[in-house]
Each structure stands twice: as structure tokens, then as C-alpha cells.
Image 1 (cartoon, rainbow, N blue to C red):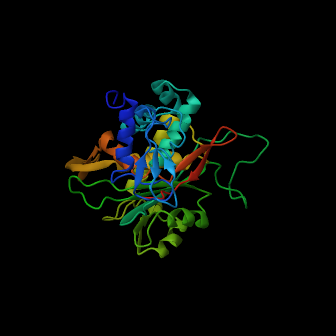
Image 2: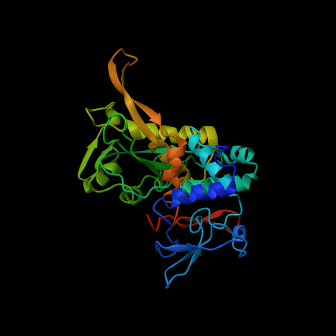
Image 3: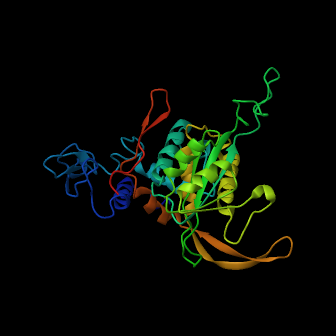
Length: 348
């Protein structure tokens, strides 16, 4: 990594190859023809290196490889961005902003915004298809005791059962178990109290109606399953966890990974920025390939066949990250936070 990202000009050419694998594309209109403007390195004009102009007569927009991406108008060197992305992709559960700042040699607020910009780039908009498992879980710890206020829930009308943040997890099963098969995509979204309306909004934007849905016996999931091609459930209250190929073990594993990542790396995430963290965790979950199968024994001595996985190299993951960077922008808000300008790629 240090050798590959040591030169700024080399990093720019490397980034252009990943963002534009089929040739330069105008960030404003999508026109595929452009000219390079001679910069300071050519001794003709005071234009910065890597500046291009669209050849369309109606556009003539000047752009670089970072225009209309989360790296738009960045003052940091490109080698800092590539090193940060490499560190996030090679880690098992991600890096906190404090740890990232120490490694890159920048301030903690800068590292915090770098992390969110990179999480925005790994977001995926494709709908989950095939067999999709859904399940919910809660984030945050036990609420503080308030002697002068009644505890939440306890059957009181109009009060939630808990003050924790409710999250809905969705995992697409891999198409096959043949060695070399990629793992399915994984998503998560914050929902309000797991109400039917909130769960529907989260699922209808992520899961295709032709998918085969797997869930537990929650009432909200039972109502949502009527809008899909097929819906199978397991009854956890009756200690039924697996029935042939019907289970939600994959999504429960993903939910557990989210909880352990937050507890061990980030310690706490706000519900406002939780979706960005879920993008990173879901992308890391999907960057695995099947390497084979092995027979294992359970605690009760029963033999089961387990799938063996191997992680995709960070060098190959980088190409998937920057391929869909154009069209996603992040700006600094007046109060020092971040504002997402566009969360959907304009040109694929």
C-alpha cells in the first residue's frame, strides 16, 4: 500500500482507471468525449493536473476524477484517500475515526468526514433478489434509570416497549455454494419501533417483489410477506429455528456482526448517521467468496456441512468501490456535520 500510493500523480491515474474503466465520462451530462486541459505540469496554463473539459457543445463542463463524488473539492491528497479506503477494506470490522486519524496523520474531525465519505461510496442501490432473510434487532445499551419517571413500555398505551434504536436487517443468500461464488448482499436500516409502515418503507426500497422472503413470526413480517412471491417463516417462540431450507440464521449472523462492530470499534453511533455505517458493514459482508465445504460436529455430536469462506482482496474491492462513486456527493454542514447531496449514482 505504501509503495502503490506514494506518488500523487500515480494515485490520480489509478483513481481515473477505477472511476472511468471504459474511458472518461463527463460528470455533468454523461458525454463520453472530453479533452485534457494543459496544466502547470505542461508549462502552458495555470490549470491543475487532471482537469478535463467536456466536448459537448451544450455542456463544456470542466471536471476532474473527483467531481460529483464524495471526494468533490477535497483539499487532501489523493494518496490520503486511497490509504484510508485501503485501511477500511482490509480491517475485519472497520476503523474508528480516532484510530484512522492516528494512522493517516490528520485530525479526528477530518478522519470522521473521510470515513463517512468512504462509507457513502460503498453504498449499493441494487434490489435484493432470490432468497432474502429479514430480521430486526435493537441497538444501544440499557437506558439510565429515572426515579421520577415510569419505565418505558410495560403495557402502557401510547408508549414504546423500549427506548433502544430498532434496526431491520436484510441479507440475500448466495446463489450457489460452488467454490468461487460471491456472498449475497446485506443491508440494514433504522426503523421506528418496527411498525408495519416503517418496516414496509425500509423493505420496499431494498427487496425486489419477486424475492422469496424468510422471516420469523413477527406480525409486521407476516403482513409484509403477502406482497412477495413467496414467504416462509420459522416460529422462534416454539423453539423452531430451522425447517429444511427455511431459516434466518444468515441475517442473525449479520445482525450480530453489526452489534459487535459497534460495541468493539465505534462504541456508539447516532441514528442519523447509522445508515452510513450499515453501508460499510453490508459491503464488507458481501466481499467474501465460497472456498469449499467441510463437515463439522455440533455440540450434541451431530454432523453438519459448513460452508467455508475467504475474503476478497482489498485491491479487488477498490475497483468495486470507486466504480459507482460518481453521482454521490457529501458536503460539510454549517454546524460542522455532513450533508448528503445525492445518494444515487447518476451514470453507472
